[in-house]
Image (cartoon, rainbow, N blue to C red; front, side):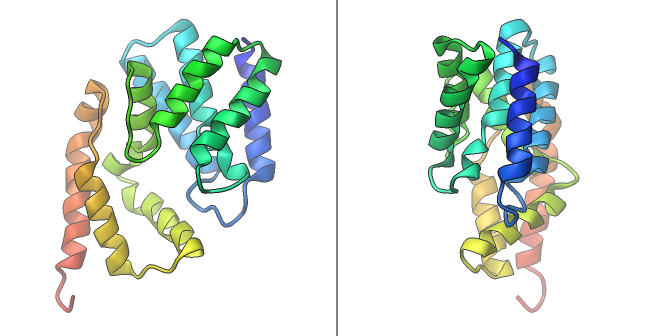
Length: 195
């Protein structure tokens, strides 16, 4: 398995091919998810081949956006299935990677520890200080597809965050409390005078 070469390939493809209007599902998001995946993998004791497969899944998880937004997880799996054999990945390894990619579909449905890690990494920002900054990029991107005013956006965020939960002990320990604070801040925007 040539992990480094596969990483270079997909990052170059994303850099050149992602549509400019994707302010959230951008190369920055892929890098962010990759870093969160690395951090969670280390904390959860994931090593060797499993770690490489997990990090490969993080790099490919939104590659479907190269083609379209709808069903992008399935398309990401198709891209992984098409290109990863060129880098020595076996059918079994690619199947595992696709399982991880598909687990990130909302609502998230992870069945293994690796799938739980990538799900938590994909939404790591919900429990971080840069939550509002990253959230703004998602709001901008959503508005490319359909207009939503700020109150509608805040209601959507509240609904999403109330349904969401972190799966891994590490994410629960590191992100749960801050996510709750962020949720309360979003709620306070809706309750502001004049609303």
